[in-house]
Length: 145
Image: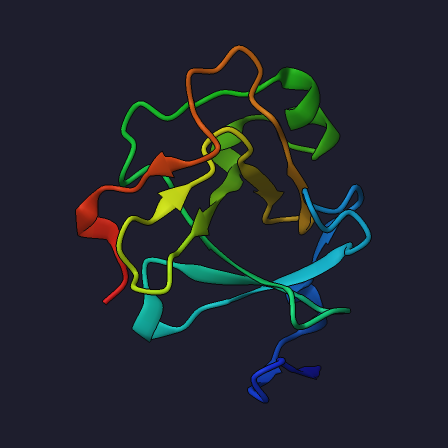
């Protein structure tokens, strides 16, 4: 399958790469299907790209290398809803906010994205009773090149 981004870039993906968010993600509840697009130039970031609206491309990353104390468990209802036995089976991502200059990057640790990589079902959840913020500064070592 192929889609063309707003910038004219053609992205190829397989049907089994599609991640379905039954409830959408915050700010884009009407978008249900996404694909992860890796580009070596922006690692450790990955694009979460909306299939039905390819202008919707969110930079995401795995928070654990940068936030050692990030929760290792979530509400059991969320885990069960995604068909997971434990969070260890999931792909955990957070949305990044990257300013134009690439400095002062923040990540949303309050609302992580959890994906069952076996079923390709995902959900964005809000951590209740959490000290994490929606705009948590990302350590300088993790900024884009």
